[in-house]
Structures are given as C-alpha cells and as structure tokens.
Image 1: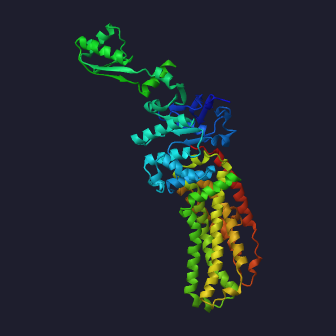
Image 2: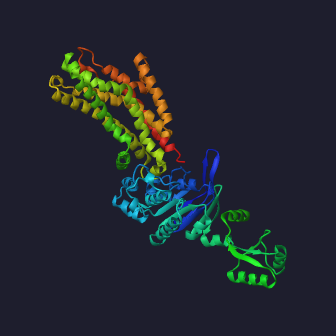
Image 3: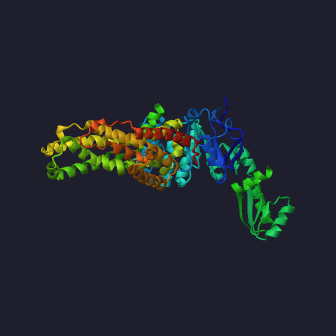
Length: 302
Length: 265
C-alpha cells in the first residue's frame, strides 16, 4: 500500500496548445494537511479537477490511495469530498435541501444533512433558500457538502474565500480537527502563504503549472527566511556602520534597512548597538517574506 | 441501475419546486380546463349542431390536440430539454454532479429520462383530463352525447403518437441545451426549426419527415378523423414515428459522447 493519499507522477495537462500543468509530481502523505500554494492561474484548480477526474488525465499519472484514477474513478470518488471554486449549490433549494439532494446521490441517510448543518453553523438558516445565503454561508454549505459522505480525503479549493475573520478561524479549526482527530487527509489550495502556514503540515508551491517546492512546513520555513527591518535615522552611515560591524545587509531603502532575522535576542542586541552608537531607531520588527518573494527565492535556487 | 435510479430521484428532488416540473401538470389542466369551459359556455350552440357522439369527441379532443401538436408541444419539449440542463448550468453544478461516485452514463441518462418522463406525464394528463372533463361536461349538461361513445382508444393512440413523435425533437434540443448554457441559442434554433417543421409538414414536402420538428405535425395530420372513416384504423407506428425514434436513439448516444468528452472547466 502506498503511503500517499495522492500521488501524481510527471502529470502533464493541456487545454489545446496551452500547457496548464507541467510535469507535476505531487506527493500528499496520508493524514497530512497539504497546503497547495500558488498565485491565481497557477494551475491549482485545474489540478484539483484532474484529481476529481473532471478533467481527464493521461493514464498512469494520477494515483489516489495508490489506485490509478481513470480506471478506478467511482471507487476513488467514493472516498473523496471536494469543494471546487465556488460551492456548487442549487439556488432555488434551501440549504438543507441541497444537502438532502447530496444524500440521495450518495445513498446516505438524510439525517446526516442536519448533522452537517449544525457542524458548519447553518442550522438556523437550514430552511432558507440557498440563493439568499451570503457568500460566507454558501462557502460553509459547500464545505458541508464536501464533508457529508465522511470522506477520507478532502480537496478544498480556497475554502476560506469570502469568509469573514471569524469564519476563516472556524474553517481553519475545522480542518485541523478533521486531520488530527479524524485522520482525514486534506489538500487545501490557497494563494495566501500566511493562511497555509497556520494549518498545513506539508506544502506544495506551484507556479505556471510547475511545482517549485514540495516538502514539510518546516522545510518551507527554512526557505522562507524571516527578515529584520529597521527604521533608523541617517540610513547611509547606519548601514555603513552595520556592515563594518559584520552584519549582512540584504536591502536598503531611504527609510529602512533589511537584514536576515536570527533571533529576538540578536535583534535586541542589534538595537542596543545602534542606540549606543548614537543612531535613533524608530522601529525594528521581524518580517516574513511574502509569497511573491518566496517564489523569487525558490525560482532563483532552481 | 441503482445509480440511474438515484440520479432520477435526485432529478425529481431538484426540480420539484421549479416551473419545469409544474408545467407538466399545469399545462394540461389549464388547456383542458379552458376548452371544457368553452364547451360548457357554448353548450347550446354545440348541441344545436347535432354531432354524432364520435364527432363530438373528435371536436372536443381535437381542440386540445390541435393546439398541443402544432404549437405548444414542440415548444414545451424545447423548454423541458432546456430546463433539465439549465438547472446545472445556472447553478454551475455540472462539476459537482460529475464528481459524484456515479457513472457518467447514469447521470446523463437520468436527465434524459426525466425529461421524457415529464413529457409523458404532461401528455398522459392531457389524455386523462380530456376523457374526464368530457364526462364531467356530460354530467353538467345531460343534452351532450359524450356518454354514447368511448374515446379512450382514439385518445391513447393520438397522444401516444404525439409523445413518440416528439422524442426526436427532445433528443436534438437536449444536446443543444447540454452544449450551450444560455436560453437563446437552443430556443432560437428550436423556434426556427419548429416553424420550418410546420411549414414543410403542411406543404407536404416529401422529405419533411426527415426534419424532427415536423414530426408531431405530420403524426397528428394523419390522425385527423375523416367523416365516416373508422377513427381506430390509423396505426401508431408510422414512418414519422420510426423516424422520430431513430433520431431519438442516435442523438441520445451522440449526447452521451458529448458528455464524456465535455471538459468541466
């Protein structure tokens, strides 16, 4: 048995002449929360649709629970719950009816619909038409639909889209719960690194259809070196002073100096050093690289 | 088979609150109701004509059949084919549907069968209500002679023909509605096709039977009862019906290949 819930082997996918996914080799370990990161248009949704066999992949390139997807479509889909792009909801039906319809299709008890509604906090809006739902409520209903069959593998495409901060936290906690307490494997896509960092155990970064990085969250942290930004008067002499004192300066603007972040202890020492030498430090803080810079970093090293 | 059954149940569950479903029930009630009301209101005049019972039934049922066959039926079929597919286009739910652990053929066949079923229900109600309301008229106005002839054979034959003749249009429109998410393209093509069908059928073009849209008109034209002729003499399975069934079968299979190749973007 394979240890991967999802494994793609050199997956290629084209729309006409346009290559959307190039030589993609995803490895999503069982029980992990796999953050699938990439900017808009990177090929995340296309990949998820391939994993659901909505888009047909070449044979022997996509394996779910160790089984080839094209020849085991139904058996595999039974074990997957998914939320792709906007939640697929019938606007003329109520929230509950949408879930009951899913129960009919999956051949499961209709009582499950109520259970799911309370899980995602929609019990009170159960009998309201889904077209009257707010964006966040629709998203929750979409998550409920993905969860209703109690699948082993969840594919969630930007599940926090359109949710307010409270909703984002709830969905985040729900995902952590599902993975830790119920041993689900979750693949969650996002274009926000900060969002993924909070929940994921593993990360894959995709850009223009190519996987640039894949590994555990700690391996990613090693790559995404945090920086220390210092706002100080007299930038020129301050940077000369720091260079002479043996610090490596990464960037310098007319307002601030950026150095590699080591630890809070070291940052304090640096602050003291600057002040003792007559510089006025107005601000000093740790800055993580944003996704854009991380991409540049990763592409540079490749 | 199980997958087909649950897909059908789901189709019903999804559409039971929509106009498409209720149209199948309301359309026959309204049209048969209006015609019966007309017969009730004009009873004196109609009785004055002294129709033999068979002709009275022919006039009475012909009113509904004529309107249905020539105009409403093709548009009703076009609308059914549209709405069964539109429910997924409108809500962007194709991808959800095809991500379910059900084989694609069942999902497709269930949609098609559901449209066929709605048309069947609609025509079945037309036949039943024509029969029932006719006898109701007899009870209300005893001077009518509806009770002296049993029209069930002629009703069953006519509506069976109409039903079978409309399946060709259904399959064609089903594919169009599957391909295009908007209302205008399938509706526009269906409208032009229907007009063309009516004209070619009425001018008696010898290849008119090759146009699916002209088949209900052709099928019903032959059904018209001539004075003195035996109304039960007409066969159900005529050339138009076979053409319609062949169109339906071929296009149904073509539609399935479109569905399997359809990329869910």
